[in-house]
Length: 505
Ligand code: KIV
Ligand code: ZN
Image 1: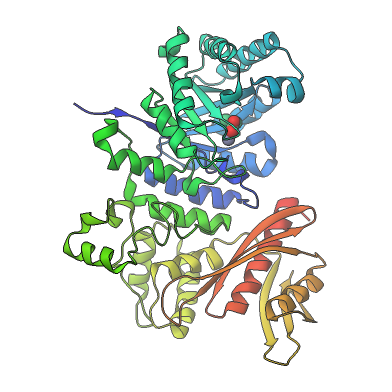
Image 2: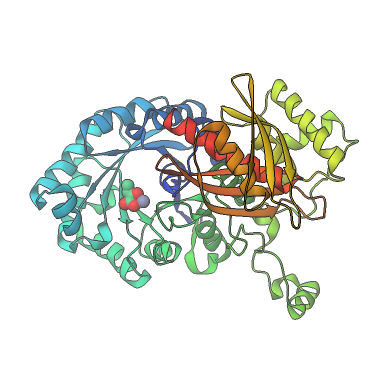
């Protein structure tokens, strides 16, 4: 008998994009949505269309282009939100509108300034209004885990009566603990008389590091839709991680007697893509997709692995798409092998983009003996799938060393003009950033800086990720090169270009 399916609702493009510093362009969102479709996510929450014109356009592009998953847009119980959400998702074959309204005492009193009866009335109105557009309506009582139980049952029952097909119970502030959250879900199932008319869903934040555990406790108590994100991205400490939930279900079939439709071999690719496009690095010890997830350091462990893998490995790297024996390209590789590899990596490039990427590949292959998949992905993200760059790094010259004041000369291209500035700094990177500030006239404050080697070896490309505060916002940027100062300059400039794109200056 086939197992009961858990629906995977991916909200990387909505809640995930609310991660501090993360911001995605419409193209970036579309690229990730294609990967989510390859991953076979059941539902993609593509954004909050009323929040900005950019987000509206991104949700619309996802709705128009992505086949397979349900495409969902978020809305408050507000007429304009619902109208705009429908305007964006209506192009999808399977559109969903997700309406939400806070139900906890603290939110009702201080944020909404509304009493219980009015909240119930508004929730019913929101669901019914959205139902005029589409059948597939999801309702979320925001901050459900801190809502009075009896009131929560009342709101949920009313929303289902109004036509909600899915009711989602969010632990909005990541406050619940697993036994408590599991009992909340059981309580809803036992006390809401019409609960069988909808899919019961959960959406768990990670403020106490319990997002995945709470989601699993909910699943064990009857939740059949889990809202989650790639790499656990999301507001504040993030959301429950998709890859962790899916692999827990797959690995512990003996406990769950459940299944998902996720093609797990696509998980690693999805994680890498999301990390590159948001500029948020995956911590090395991250479960399932971190760089160390399948590395064994201790001699006793290595010995055990060689004797029998299962002694210390509960997951096969290949099950999540980590392929240690990947094909390596070099400077003698031809266009055909190159094109084929890009396709296998999931990039859908047109001929012009392939030519552009191939040119960059040849330049890199001259500097580096072997070009790995990660290098190819960096080429595509850096040179092909770039946001419209206002400022482009033309040339960089550094003088630095012991007993020398570091200085940098930076030349940027801006609207076909070349602009050059020189600056000194506390180090070569600081000197570069100050010179870039002089050219752009935007003073950025470096909030965080991280560097890692994209692949192994002394000739590896360095990838720099930065978080920059400027014009009252924080924005991430990423850049790669075999020269780490150049990678640093590219990352900073990428953050500035994203800022310009975002605020439209
Ligand atoms: O965390 C939350 O409550 C949300 C809702 C909009 C579902 O993101
Ligand atoms: Zn959330």
